[in-house]
Length: 208
Picture 1 (cartoon, one colour):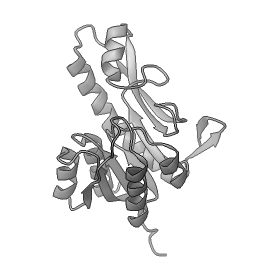
Picture 2 (tube, helix red, strand yellow):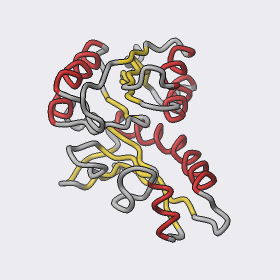
Picture 3 (spheres, one colour):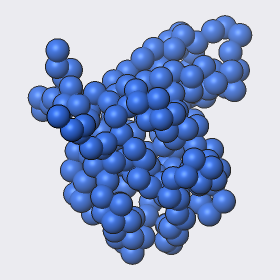
Picture 4 (cartoon, rainbow, N blue to C red):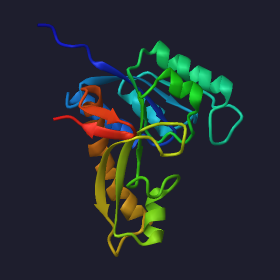
């Protein structure tokens, strides 16, 4: 029996690309039965583009348009076209700092995932690790979720806790959160692609 073809991932990122690297390495080790078909950034000199090229992954900068926090209509159409041209099965956000709106999400229904550095619904938005530290919680964590039209409001696929230490600074807490992100994100993507997650309303349920 021939092997099943690898599922194709499209990655959007704006920064260093550490989660992209974790996913790419999981693919290379065959822990994640997928391949990264394309990396796109809204930042022309984003490190994620260089990290992709170092690994032989096609990487493109697509201008985001006139808005600061979201893609404009022309840019969103260009992003959709790039993902479709790459024949991606799943769109993975890896530090992508713009909100995706209805045109993009309707082009890939229930096929856009994101990772957030907190236990949603607590501390949505930017610098969630700093929000958690400032608030004084003793436990924060990581959430992998489907993307909807809100900000960090989509159905939750996976979560993992990270303790907040009395000695933590924003930098030290963020570093430990990222260590968990790099493990949890490939695991959640693998389960989603394998059909190991089903949905009941907004709830994501693990099968088996």
